[in-house]
View 1 (cartoon, rainbow, N blue to C red):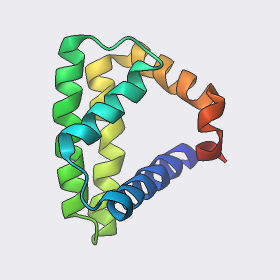
View 2: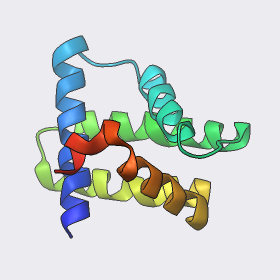
View 3: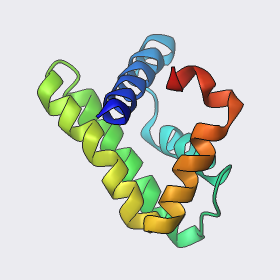
Length: 111
């Protein structure tokens, strides 16, 4: 439960920070940044990258459209990890999450 709340908080913060800094961030650039972040920890094939790009573009559009509806936004954020796991596979997604959480660069996000 703690991790779900953390993921929601990080996602909400990142959406809010991006919106404040750059207005509405271009969906493809947003997706590419997220895929690059995943690729720092696990191998992402071209096919996986294409699927992830679609997921992140849709995620950003849905999240921004629901920014004023916390329940709907929370459901969108909670559903994201399952979609990413479906593309990467259970083992690769688990490896990604473990490496991401162990990376000192992400330490602030986990406190």
